[in-house]
Image (tube, rainbow, N blue to C red; front, top):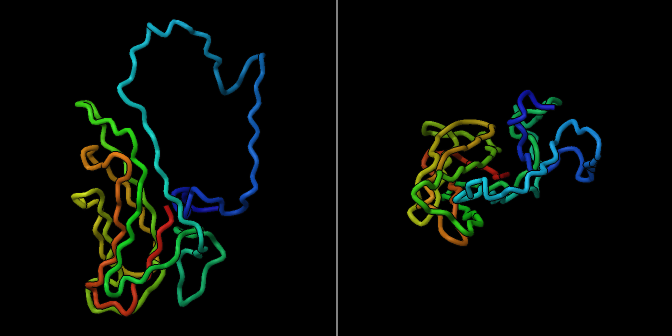
Length: 195
């Protein structure tokens, strides 16, 4: 459907149908994908200090057509097309506080960095006097650690993927901040968040 699987606007929300079914089967015969584990000698294994968990905040109330030229959309699926949240206008500045569930954080000396991933779409292409007509900034935690800061122009999808030190996370809930900065002299700066 897309040139690249990463182009989908919201991979956590089905683009085609929300009634898909998946069937898992089990057999006592030879399995093709799974190996049945029969080992019961658990003391032979070293315990892990931590396990990975995932906190997902999914925005899916509005459909966006992806790249638009002259207020029209292509019949092909383009980067960012799919479901997302409402569009926010950054004129006068805008900040959305995204609350991430971060319970039982492991902060041992061997704690790995957390992985932050977000997708957003620029859904306007207004006149501007600065370097672009969109200014997007992502921050996280009580110290508002800067994760991403970019000025750009036009309709497009922005994918942010970066590592965050565990010390920036707060037990219970960690706040991530989706900021649209009004410093480019744009008539409008509409952006939406999907994941």
